Image (cartoon, rainbow, N blue to C red):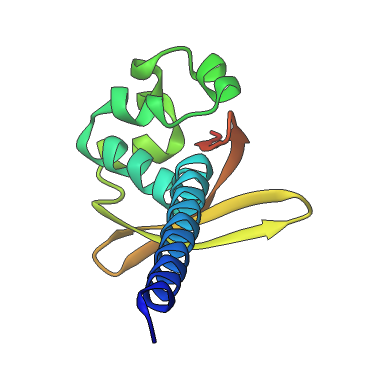
Length: 138
């Protein structure tokens, strides 16, 4: 094989390598874009909300609410008056566990188990999509 034969193979390898690199770059960009636009899952948003409620960090919890829930509650301090916050402030519950997400009749909700000792109360928190992100309804 002469010099021209080797340069043809070499150019072909470069073309394949370049095509592969571009394809990998496009796939990576697409995956990252999908994950960023999709945002946190319903259970992660409810978890962030519950962390705020449990710790008494109502600003954090308020930030996870939908716009209609924010209007209904008024401000972060208003979350103290919600039933779920009252379970912690009154000592009815001292721990929680995030359960499964359920989609029924176009509504999405996340199960939350509130516990104190052997006593367990199960509630479902509704979540809605706003601006491409899940938000908690109260």
